[in-house]
Image (tube, rainbow, N blue to C red; front, side):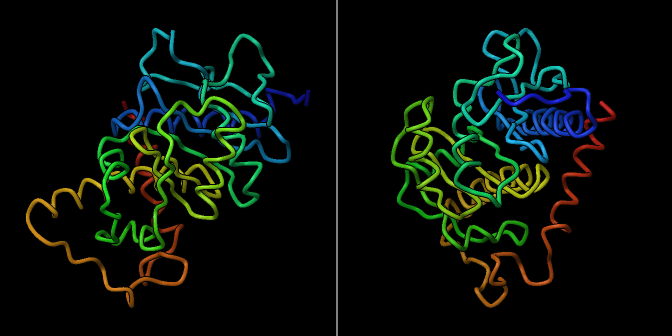
Length: 240
């Protein structure tokens, strides 16, 4: 088992990121009581992840760093008094498969779930979420992803993409930072909601491919600019 100084600035920053993401995602109604963000702890093979909340008496909008677990890549907690969630292997197996990923968010957004059970692919309809133009795979299994083997299958379905839908279950978004993963998860659900609204009105007209760069982002935008939403959301929750 890896050891680490849990009072170090790196660990405290990772825990704060997870706590902030939890509160933001809960306000968006994407998680609660199920769903969880995580982040790699820089320079280690450890992960900071929202602790198991199934028996908690605290709302996710009230979560703080003290509610964040530290687990290794086998899903084992450093502190047995605060364990990771049952689906922690979603996070660990994606980290094992993707060296480019430093943060993972698993959520259960209603509109994403609707598209997971539909034959309608998500389309780039909003300039802040054009990465869906590269395709959003759907993992065929709807069951609880509570073993490394099941999670490895999910990671394989996701491949190198930033998102994956889980059939009748939820979604996963990843990024090189918590800001990117959290923004992607929220943007994915907003895109799904927008498309469902447009489809009810008539045929949707996606953003033209010529206005989307090779990295999937809208022409004229960088990920850092899109991530400004994270900074704004953090400011919002700090004032509650």
